[in-house]
Length: 299
Image (cartoon, rainbow, N blue to C red; front, side, top):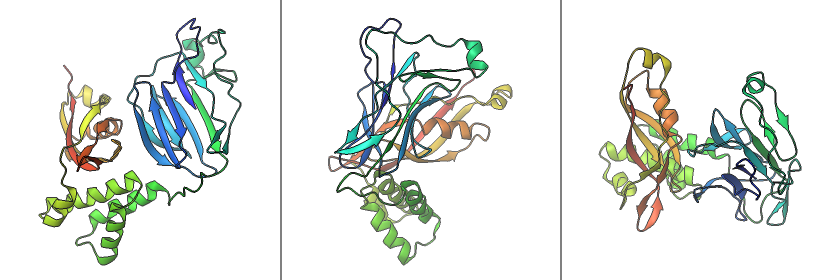
């Protein structure tokens, strides 16, 4: 399924700007109009997917949880392109979305007054409301033979919590070793976060585990939105963050390293929307912890 910008009077079907698709190996992937293609999760039977625009940001959602937020600007009007009918022979259910009607042109956009009043317009291919536009669908069965592990968010949180143990006990060490070899990119990245903390504390073995040939580098940076209170008080500066980047270039976790209290949350929200060229090790993409600054300037 996908959302795509449509220019007035456009005679051809649009190319997807924000697309979510399911691969045969059980992965949920995001492909965008800039040519980027990234793995964001794994799927199983009964999962519900949505691509939506919230506060001007395109979001990819699995079972009500945001998997990924795009840093690409959203342009209107938007069309909902057809949901896929099946993946690896398995049906995908959802509302009938026959796609772009050739030559028919987009429906009239609602007026600002209609949007502010909460009025909306919908057809099988299009929908408008105060939040924007969205498409959704549900997988009817899991890919075969791929299997999905426990919910990634719960597993990632479990591994990250090991960083709070001093020292890490035998059970924690076993969990950390397992996470480091996990096929889920976010879980593996969580293990690197824990090891990076140990390395910072002087653990030479941990330092060897997190060493990379080339660091992660920002690919797309979302700007921080200035908090009104900080703006009124003329508070500015750079918030320094430690950012955990997976081997897919996704931000898995971030923590404030150097705080400016009224700007910290805005900095965290911004960096969670960044994308990176991942670090490499032995010529292969590898998770890493990198330090970044998010600037806030009034003038």
